Image (cartoon, rainbow over the protein chains, first blue to last red):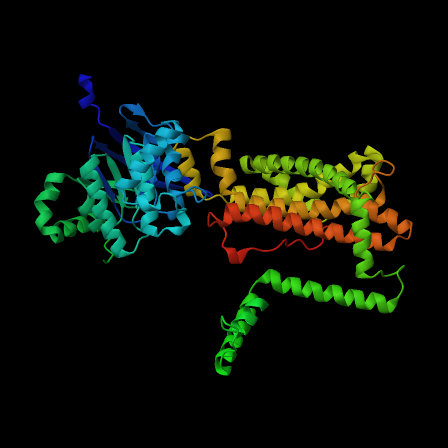
Amino acid sequence: MASVSEVPLLKVNGVTLRYRIEEKTVTATERVGFRIEQGDRVVLLGPSGCGKSTLLKAVGGFLHPSEGSITLNGRRVEGPGPDRVMVFQEFDQLLPWKTVKENVMFGLTASRTLSKREAAERALESIRTVHLEKFADAYPHTLSGGMKQRVAIARCLAMKPDIILMDEPFAALDALSRRRMQDELLELWNENRFTMLFVTHSIEEALLLGSRIVVMSPHPGRVAEILEAEQLNEAAGSHPEISERIKRVLFRDAPEYVI
Amino acid sequence: MKRNGIEAGLTANGNLLPVTERAAQDNRLIKKLYKLFDYVWLRRLVLLAVLCCLWEWYATRLANPLMFPTFSATIKALAHAVAGGGLPGRIATSFRILVVGYGIGVLVAVFLSMLAVGTRIGTDLLELFTAMFNPLPAIALLPLALLWFGLGNGSITFVLVHAVLWPVALSAHAGFSGVNTTIRMVGRNYGLTGIRYVLAILIPAAFPALLTGLRNGWAFAWRTLIAAELVFGVSAGNGGIGWFIYENKQQLEIPSVFAGLITVIAIGIAVENLIFDQIERRTVLKWGMKSARQVTPGTVKSAV
């Protein structure tokens, strides 16, 4: 047990991800590495094309690194599994043929984590934490975008996974809903202290949600800088300053970009 | 409705209301009648009644029951066939063969489309088969089927399977390959693989397309079955509805021929509306996987 503290919850070690589009091989990320500890809120931040989503899918087990390794609690990630639950950007991640409650239960029963009865209880509990108890028996197509994402988060929280993987979950929402969802997510974290890896291209969102920010540069995706919580806290009063710094890091190789 | 109208004209103690008030109430009555016409089924029922009246009128004027019997004679023949002419037995015979043929066709179709989703060679095979056999009316295989399986259920079943298999396989393949990546990933994220993945994710996600396929398959099967039955009775004196039509034509019982045709139509409509529409309402419409406006009533052009 003594060694547990030395093994990080998640270790991404020199990961290179390549995929083929027709005849061309595209390198999404090159030798990317970082660690995530219990209770961290790590944000992968970068412009489109930096491979952050691809990297998240690799952590999810949907892609295999062509170089390097991803380990969870010291065990190599070989495929998808319910110990790493993903929340996607797309609203259609909910199963339209199941009600809100059944959707939240689905993860628990499909993964054989809980029996049906226990799953129903845990699902209702989880739905309450995202304030959707009135909609437990509604079908997803009757919900707004923000509510659908809350259901997806509830489904994910109910699983109590080792790590929650979020792939720009609020990107398709309108600005007001996005803001509310970000606050709610932080509230949920305060209550549950889960571990989260969050992908976004919004500097503002990264600064708001992250306890650590892994800034990535594009073509191919590399880790440009890792900002720790202390640095972020220092800059808490002066967001403009640190976001300027992130912009400089992000675009130092691409002077033609203008924000 | 009418009674309401009469009562509306009188007060409780039977006195007539002032004229203006009565006119207003008549107005309301007319509005109510108009509202009633918003019901599709009512409009259709009225149209149907008009058509039946036209039929009766024309056939009576024609006065040639051998060529074109009246509506009432047809209904009489239908009632007679149902009560004592063994029509229910014929329907049962038809349905027995239909269920077997349809069942086998659907199972093979699902298997083929699974194979097509899983492997590239399976996709090629399915596409080749459907391209080849879709233009070929199933009934055209009947002579060959008779040669292979003889005069009997086997031949009709073979033709039915052919009629159901290709349209269902085509829809099923489209449905399975159209399941979006996010839902697939959700399924695999929670550890679903193999048959559990197929049952819990692929089939429900592809259900709108599957249902369309089943609906089309049914339409093809029903038309093909009647056509095939016209050619021969399965075992002497015990054919299906198609055979019932043919037999009565041979015996110049033309009202019974019409009765047989009406039965074919009625069963077709009943299965469409009572079975498939109900399934649709309880599944894809309830789940919002297909909006109500998109619903197309059996869009099969010509199956035979």
